[in-house]
Image (cartoon, rainbow, N blue to C red; front, top):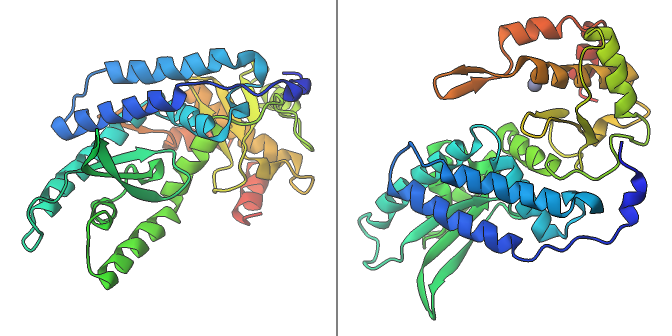
Length: 321
Ligand SMILES: [Zn+2]
């Protein structure tokens, strides 16, 4: 458990972190638009080492959660992409965007000489934005920067993001904006947003206002794992948004629970159940089939049912408290 007095330490400032993510984004777009997978592993290595460097630079000063907003978002994005399968998914959606952009630019009726489009996905504060790309003094294309949550979105949504960057009839644009907003309000987008948020949660070592994750872990470990587990990093997430109640990061061996659970109205056995669920992810890992990874397998669900108050906890969570 970290001392909460760390909160009074000076905030860390990291110069160059946002510039590093800018360079990575450029490299990602180049790779994704140039050809299909397999993509070289160097990019993932660069992302992981950048994330680790940030962590070691602010280790003694409250961790990445204490960074100013732009740096914190940059770090969250690096940490998010550093984990299994996410960079591939990111590049695959960028590749889809590149293909769509190439097609849309050359549609009949489009004026000749439209600028080239680049589509980035990033840990943005807005859903998306469009700005000119500059090479020296002159505009050299258009850059669409969309939220990381759009990675994995259906082709119509990616196409809407591309089309929003180009001129179009007003009514048509309204329809595109609606398609984008509706996807962003859905569970897939929000799951990404929460996972990004959880990457740099506030310090405090899991001691919440009402529930202490250290004590929760000890009880679950004793009751359900015969005390055999070592203690992972335990932390409360920063955001109460999203539906996800917990998250396990294997790369960082961290269990993060949503602060929604840190409430006197939430019974201890519910917090324990969510902790148990995340610890099962740690113990069972993912089942890999082809390029996909499955986490909630039938075996996982069976193990989940071994929780002593499984039915009660499930019923409580289903009632959407
Ligand atoms: Zn799960």
